[in-house]
Amino acid sequence: MPKTDFVESGVGAIHYGQIYTFYGTWTTETKSFVASQTAARLAKVDPGDVIITNTSENLDDVGKAVAWLGSEQIVTGGHATVFKHSLDPKYVAYWLQTPDFFAQKKRLATGTKVIDVSAKSLGRITMPVPPLEVQREIVRVLDTFTELEARRRQYAHYRDALLTFPEGGVRWATLGGISLLAISGATPLSTRLDYYGGGIPWLRTQEVRYADINQTEVTITDAGLKNSAARWVPTDSVIVAISGAGVTRGRVAVNKIPLTTNQHCCSLTIDPDKAHFRFVYYWLVDRYDDLRSMGQGNRSDLNVGIIKAFPIALPPLEEQARIVAILDRFDALVNDLSSGLPAELAARRKQYEYYRDRLLTFKEAAA
Image (cartoon, rainbow, N blue to C red; front, side):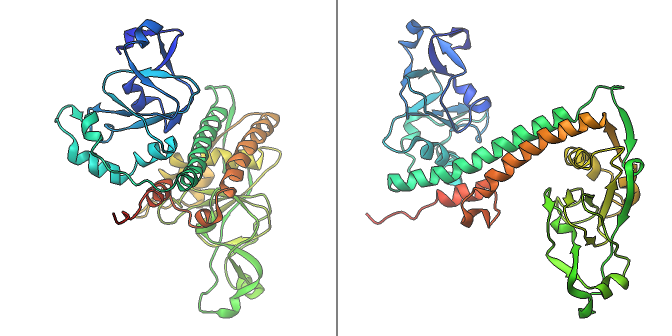
């Protein structure tokens, strides 16, 4: 099925190369079509079938698959195997992404420049087959993660688009120039137990997680506040993690309560006559990599001076408010879906791949 066979409309067709570059785990529509006379000589794909690639230039891509969930029969061409079965098609497609499948296909692959796993070789691969209701429950959980990731990508795309302005089209300033207050916090002496457990919220860097802060995990006392350099941070400030392990440095949050912070946080109280505080928050979310790259010293830490000097584009306040309203809706969609994950999975906060591999790993039943 060369791509020269494609027409504007006709019988739906999936080219094996598109499985690498266009399709995800499953699809209900095809990107391409062929004429009915061309389709007559091609491999038929019925609803529920899974199309698996046989050939690629690398081992990772060979064996990639897409489940066809459309309502009509479509076709595929060479370098693809049509797997017809009685399983949940999404379950099959998800299992074909696991390390178990990878290990088996690696042993069966041939070639060097072009890697091939033939249909006959694919037929030798064994896969776990739990009861259909278990397959469907696995699919339900993995679909939730897949949808969440898709929404996150869409959210990031629109955020980037909304926060990109033509050169010369808006006024620019620094974060320090639009802030009424820009401070770091402090840590009361840890050996003084009477400094902790009071009624003053005290934010640590690891709690800065791209979310509104309504409470803190640790509190300090009036004595702890008085005998340290910690300071009160007004509500609706933009808080930046200026140091921390892994991806923490450069993360931001907004406090919905007055609080104090440790010395590894920079708190920006934004002048409402110059900028919307949530516009500043989204700007820093979008510029995470740029901000992190400005770190200094052996640990590449940020500091209040670096944060204050960081540039920001400033469209009119009404335009900032419009952008904030759009991004708030996207943010709510992503957060609503996150909270909808099964509790036992969400609590672990593990990556999608962890759940996929764990859910799709079974002990082989005795014969």
